[in-house]
Image (tube, rainbow, N blue to C red; front, side, top):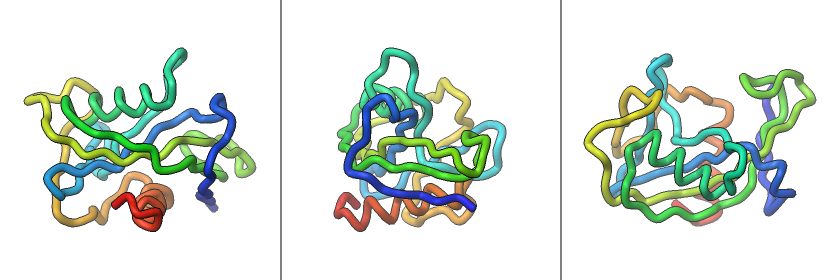
Length: 145
């Protein structure tokens, strides 16, 4: 069982991930990792020395090829339970949820992402079906989408 919770803030050092719900010209932007057949929202791990906003901008650029965009924080989220990141059922990891409007993209991707999907509809085949749809719903609930 995986539990997703939303928080207004936590101590900065707890924020290990950034996830960025992205749109361009009113359409959703999803990523397809080279090693998976599913789609996900851009995002990833915070690197040493980065602010969580720097993480979000870097991951958005790496995973979508975005070169011009507006990005806004939505809220802190946490995932509790055994996942690819959490080793034990009692482990809880924290991240920052963002929304972004992408205005322009590079012509090629230079990361582990094989392709991006720009679509009017949400995907059915999520890489993280117990987590990312809940993040999307929370951003909608808070009026960001």
